[in-house]
Image (cartoon, rainbow, N blue to C red; front, side):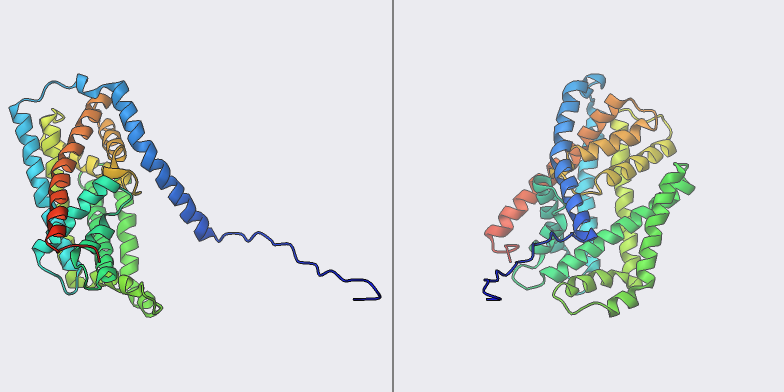
Length: 329
């Protein structure tokens, strides 16, 4: 009460706090992922309905089917190479066979769910009940970094020595430079790492920066990418997208490999439906391939990659869950 008047306290009006830039970037990325997750498969279905690409491709003969079947077998070997490289990233690894089936289940989960869940799933299925999820997740992310380092080196070599576009070499050089910077400054950022629960994950990622481990993983990465180039070349040959020159076929396969991996860099729809096809078609069209032929090839190649892994990974998930191995943590 002041001078006979009742004083009513004034509550300050709440002001809207501005979101930090990182929050806005994360929200924008989530929105972009949601758009891609829905739009890419829908666009693929509409594109297939309008273009009818398989009407522009002659029926595949026994030789072409044999080439595609051979690529499918190599794809299962490729999963083993990825599991081997991932195992090299783990400080105290389990058996290679365990890593293989965890990797297979991760691919199957990504086919069904999308959104880049493979690293989370393979980490969760590797050593259930042992409290090693965060460490295994770090090893999985470190393996992913080395995988893209290997691809970046391939891009540099293909762009400078293989006759591909110089932009391919530039993108690859940027990737190699970023990794080299992380390796050179690892002592600084590891020393400043706070003692939080997620620090285990970061240290597991940093474990791949050990030179001996890194050399072994990069070598396996080269072998894996080379195997994927062979799979692409077999399927390109099956669809008649071979001008008779082996070097030209390999160069085209490398360009498609780069196009696909750039297109699927942002995790999106289940099985990367639509995004993988767009990257492959764009790469092939730049080499003079007809768009309908390129679309038919990309759909067939995608099916060859997805179907065997989905069946094997789904069966592994069901069997290992029933037997008590690989269950939820």
